[in-house]
Length: 102
Image: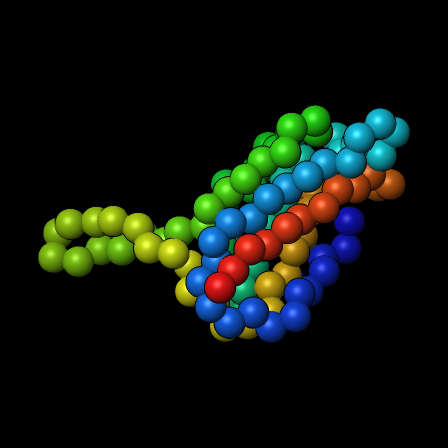
């Protein structure tokens, strides 16, 4: 499937939800999604791989913080268009991506 760019998003990504079509247009099982920002970073950190053809998947994008030997995670800050790409899903199959941000 061709990549699709969103409008420019400015804020924190809260959640990305992947909803596969059903019936004859359901994606092939274990299809892959990426959401890449203008700096070529996959905001899903690879967690969009091997998605189910029948089950909706919700991913909370976070990035790892390293400070003084300790680590944690923070919401993914964004200020760019996002490029959404699907692979291994079948040529005529589909679904929807819902991106929540504030």
